[in-house]
Amino acid sequence: MRLATYNVEWFANLFDEQDQLIVDDTWSGRRDVSRAQQAEALGMVFSALDADAVLVVEAPNTGRSQSTVRALEHFAATFELRTRRAVMGFANDTHQEIALLYDPGVLSARHDPVGQTVGDPEAPRFDSSFRIDLDIDATEDLVRFSKPPLELEITTGQGTVLRLIGAHLKSKAPHGARNRDAAMRLSIANRRKQLAQAIWLRRRIDRHILDGSEVMLMGDLNDGPGLDEYENLFGRSSVEILLGDDLYDPHARRALQRRLGAYPTTARFRVHDGDGYLQALLDYIMLSPGLMSRRPVWRIWHPFDDAECWELADLRQALLLASDHFPVTLDIDI
Image 1 (cartoon, rainbow, N blue to C red):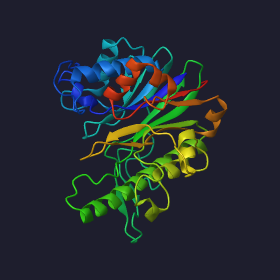
Image 2 (image 1 turned 90 degrees about the vertical axis):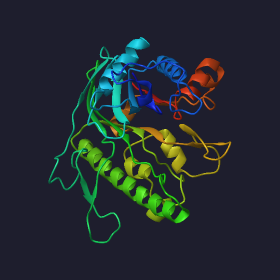
Image 3 (image 1 turned 180 degrees about the horizontal axis):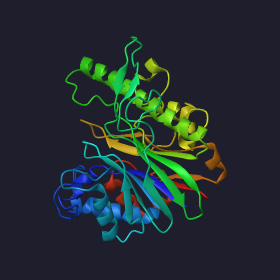
Image 4 (image 1 turned 30 degrees about the horizontal axis):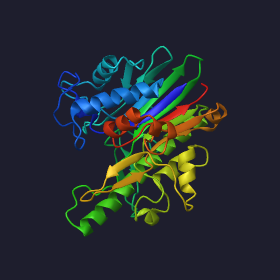
């Protein structure tokens, strides 16, 4: 079975109020990329992945008239994808939902949130609030997810049952800061909140593992070792908190070694006010110990670092047009 996580930049911009694809020459939201170019590139990428399920990060919007599920299923029908069924969890206000697009002939997936909405001191439900002292001032802070993680119970055709959690943690970027001091304060506050979200997620993972469930955590964690100068203030990155001693992702483990030399990347951003690009490892698929015995193989579909993606010129171009993130896949015997 092949599972994937894919952050699709500005996916919501490709759909009208009736959740139909807009395929025209107007700009998509991606720099110098039209809606038609991005939609066609995404169709090629999803077809090339040929995954049994794709966690779509920054999925189309759910709102007053729009539906994430309906938009994704229309997208799948347009490009004749076998991942033709969609499921999502709690909607949010950011126009960046988290959803799973999957092949119903291979697996079933249902939203199955865990935790209480009030009065849960350990790990409340993800659409609730988490109490934690963020700055060691003996005063509890209330933390919320702007994008509540998606909790699914997955049952495969082989009868394997597992918990899949899709996440998009808060960005540490100081959006809105007007000067260097404001940027520093906002960056530190954002990192503190992101670490609190990681602790919340980790407690949920611990609960599932203690209950004997196998867990797969995937998505855009907006973090990794060495990504900003404030990391040393807190000792650990969100990725290290989430991995703990029992989850595994080979790309994360390799990056955490912090040795000289290249390490994997899953995203490529245009540098503001410059002509270059910044690459980062942001997207992960982490497995609990029991899943590690199922012969997992990870792959980052990077247009320049993956040999097959590089050699297939059409796919290479599609990956660059479709998003500023690249898909990560997991082949596993479940």
